[in-house]
Amino acid sequence: MHHFFLSPDDIHDLQVIFPAQVSHQIKHVLRLATGDRVAVLDNCGSIYTVVLRNETAGGQRVGDIVSTQMATSEPQVQISLFIGLSSREKMEWIFQKGTEIGVSAFCPFVSTRTLVSNTGLTEGKMSRWKRIIQEAAEQSGRGKLPVLNAPEKLADCLRNATQTNGLCLLAWEGLPEDGANLKEALRGFTGDKLALFVGPEGGFSDAEVASAQGAGCQVVTLGARIFRMETAAIVFPALALHELGHV
Image (tube, rainbow, N blue to C red; front, side, top):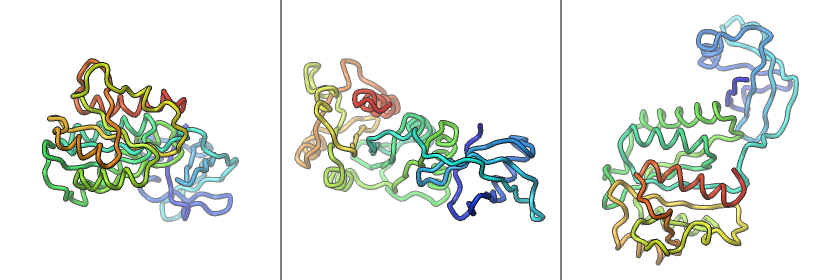
């Protein structure tokens, strides 16, 4: 069954009026017909099973709600993934796969070794990234859309993360093999918010790691092998959710 995130304003009592862009996708891309069923999500936790009806005079598709239930696909722990700004291809891949895994918020940052040194992004790029996240959320059956935050400097991210999350972890290849691992760091954790920091291609500098520790962030190792940035950005939250039993 195809999933569509819509605004609550598009849901009226027992009827759904699909926006023009989604109506076009239903008819010309997915080629769904009258009587087909789709799932509509309101980004508030509800999933509506909808039977498609004919188009309105304006070309918008209409559907009848036949059942409603709460989404059960969201992890109990909200993971905020902090990632260094990188190339378009890598960022888009992280947004897509991170959404599929269960990341709740993406928080790009700029540090001394990121490929991108400017926190400013065009409106077009942010819109494209949000669209990629939405498509991935629909494909994977997420109950809520992950949040995409505007890029910030690493220092600001560290300060905000340690103040608003129950636990803040930073993966660093500089720790010895017998350093604190993820399993140990998460042992006994019962909170509902977790911040994970993944360094850029050049890694975190020693000074940045020291600043993170000073801000209250715990440094962990992901194992004996060194991952590429985009690999670590997926492995880290996947392992965390597995350890917490919220996959």
